[in-house]
Length: 509
Image: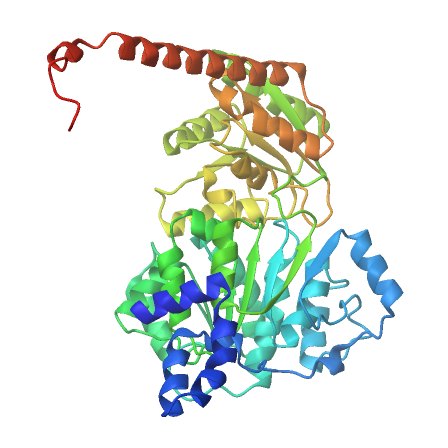
């Protein structure tokens, strides 16, 4: 553990290459040079100095695009690329030289054209390079790493032993289940063995599945850590690792479990990391374990709302929220709608609001963390296959809910942060479709008004005057509170009854 800590610290400070380059110089002036280099390798991350593990010949997958067309494509989609030896984007499946089994799979899925993150991510992943992708949710990231993962299993030979050859880590079981659905298509058509492990489900069944032998494991960090500690499985054969929504996993406190998993994979591995934002915590994780990598930013690295979503803000008093919600529902039904996703902040109110909607003739279902996995799967399937058009949920559905046809998102309660707000409304407007969001605010939400205004302006949305007034009132009240605290602090210092006991005390001590 001590060596790992020192090694990671040296990697972060950029000293590893300097140490490794100077190892031979030091050994020349030493009587016993063989003692120097092995010692240094304990502290140096070998992944920084190892030759790239080329799993595939990238030339087979070139589209033969000229540089002018590549630049046009990147500029058109606001793409920024950081790294060396970046292959050309993959803009057309028909002209590619994918293996026949991949082409047939995409054809059966009705796949026509890759999204931006897929077009850019596929050739980088196939070149064997480590990869960081920064893009909004709903941009096709799942297939951008699963398709190369399948080729990694089919085209390369894994060493003997138990444990998966591909690991995909996700922050929540809902997202893990969504990834599993895509992986199951590969399992059915190509014979790839997949397993999805997460908390809240039968542990013994999951353990039996892992011990029977699998190629791809999709896991949440907590349950994976459980199986690693109990030695049900290991990652000694895992040479392809994906961290999906890395920022969310770190926000949820999973960094120790992630680091433990990455310490268990071989040095000859390929790591792909996907995130909606690029905070320092994610950067540190990438520096510690990816070494040299290619980073692709689709849009801004700052979290921003999908511009295909029309955002409506409604401000009212707390006791008027329910009537405002009913008014919004009636307006939506008058215009016609597909599926409606309603968010609240508490589990109890999910059940209350669901019951209220049913009593008023709205076919609604609810989902939150206290429901069993079977109940959650049943509810999501009803909503997904349009057996009901209204889903009321807490933030368990804010990420990883990949359901087509959501036309409206309603925030009955505003979330704690603007980042959660963006992920909530991002359930609509996916895959270049249009969407609408409605958000109800009260005076209790004054502290979030300023950040919400920034989100609206970035997305070129109209900012209501009432919202600006809320932000101004909150700023004034905070300044007044600050001044009052300063006044009270000075007043306490000017009159301190304890001083009379200190007037004869020597100042020497």
